[in-house]
Image (cartoon, rainbow, N blue to C red; front, top):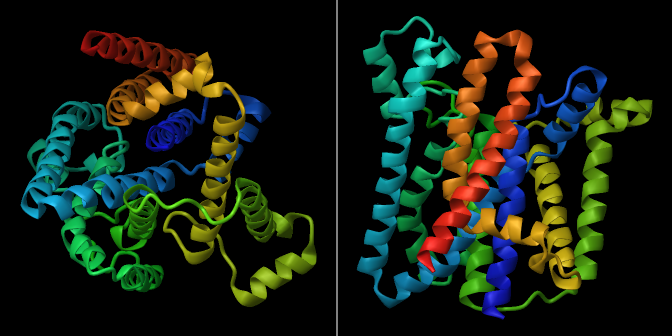
Length: 354
């Protein structure tokens, strides 16, 4: 059962990272088709939400298990992981960041010297395209050092309450703890996905408990949630009554910054994707065919896939700015090259490690 669950999580992580790649290539098409595609991608994007939940599951499952065996070693591993993320971020700043600076790409470099720009980038004080993603996970690793003692005392409910209290505070002022540029993913808001993942990881991976409801129930419930929140999101386009209702109660669904209804809407989509992925995984031979192997391959090597994608996408963005007339051609070449190169490299590395 343990291997099956791990295989499913790998496939789900692969689905999430492909979503991220598609989001960063939302201009693949031109004209009306391009507008429709970019809207669909934008309205259904659950990449950062999925990554945070799965990251939390890893912390609440595997890392927490190690923490109970030997807290000092577990803490050192978490700190080592945090330092590794920081080193990766510094590497991207000193390569991609400098390319962005000298190509005048991104508002974070506007009117600044290279010294000031690098200082702000290295100390997480600005928000550059693509380079804002990894720093979202670094403070969560340090937050883990506070989470583990709470989990050890079985104060899971307290952890959930604290998480949502901070989330509510964040909906009032997302940048209350902000230093430097306004962050795209304020930790006070987005930590809620991480904490949900931690609790799920502790419950299903560490405690090895099984869902109390069948997958059919979860699929039905997730679909119902998506339908309800989609009506709230888009209902004003076809019903004046829904529009009036949203206006009267001040209902808005936003992701930047994340608000309560935005959280509920995106969470319901992530919930549905997780259920559909499990259904396909359990009741079809997909894990054994080429599509299943592709998602599992990307999921097992998610961090490597992410780093490679960031470099490919950065080069694509710079080329688009320099050769605007070839925009869609450049995007397609970058997208396909990214997928082919990443797949070939990871397969070769896994073959070498056998």
